[in-house]
Length: 534
Image (cartoon, rainbow, N blue to C red; front, top):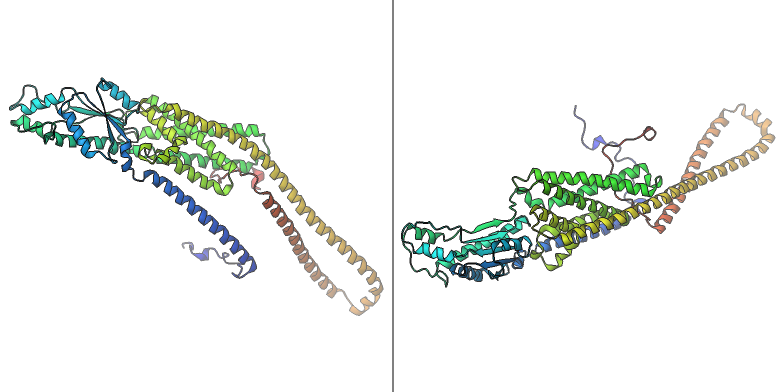
């Protein structure tokens, strides 16, 4: 027979329920509605603000594309360069990257162009090879099969670095340069002040006219694997959540063991720091290992693996300490709000290049997620994102400041844990004293009644025995009186303890919550000693 899964499975669920109009229920309902309404409003405003913040960073992203600069160097100085300029004139706008023309004297070789893109002076570089226009004109003028076939790949090329925000760069840079090349091909073949082609003949000339060049891509670090889409989003979110959950686990252990009131704070701070270092060390290894396991032919090596591991370790530990600071210095009810705000702020700082977001979002320079992503792309592209001069100092600043506040927080927790232990002992003594005082009052009252009863009994002893003829009725009456006295005493004791508890709660509310020990989670596997389980 299958066990019941309906309400009948819980037969006592509706026992001892108060009526909706009970005074205690009315008071509790009002307090509940006030608290629920306030938190309702607070959480709605928080998440509305977070949604507005993250959507605002992506708002009209395309209209900021002109902030991306592409340098153009025309080593040829012929019709192809004029075709590119004509094509850019038709495409120029807020939704197209800015084409910045430089002379061959500024960049005498394509190697210097490559270095300029590597150093992030420009988002990409487009260049036309020397003699390209003359070769193209000769191919179009040929009426037969030339002795040396025309090479369509030796005309123009562009240099870019796909590892920098790959999904965005693919469309904003590579896609738009391809569009510019196609528009320049049309401009050249129509003779709009460029190639000035009037007629062609011959199989080769027609073939060249149909496809005068093939744009070549010089990609500093190709990054086409599917997992690239989450390097600057889900991967960072999981790292942040991973640290928060272990922080809650550590707090749970300390709460179970009551170590804050037992051990020296220096020892606690040292153990917490070493434990967090070990946890983030292994966690960053797992993250880096997952990236490498699913790199799908991505051209990265063992040295880059080690460097990625190191910077992710620094990032993970800095966030562990920062979240610990939140749990120490913020009221417990605000810790989840701080966590989700921290995640959204950090992820927003790496969703897009700052050139594609409103200028306000450059505050993300101060957040560790933006800096770790800058360092990672620097490592993955073999030094072609030189942002270490500010990225590493920001990361180490978060590490050192959060470490100092976290260690100070250990002293704060130890102090208030000791104060809390003393308060609990004092409260217990107050309850015990109240119970003893009530018991002594009962004893004194009983002695007084016993003394009065003994005096009255001496005068009535003889007559009582003759009239009653036995003591059965008296014994039954005495037993009922004892039951009534016990019930009355329990009610009096409960009333006294409740008054003591109410006074203690009022004192705590006036004093406020002195310290937050942070969120703590029950452990799925924990060892309990025999004296705890008995």
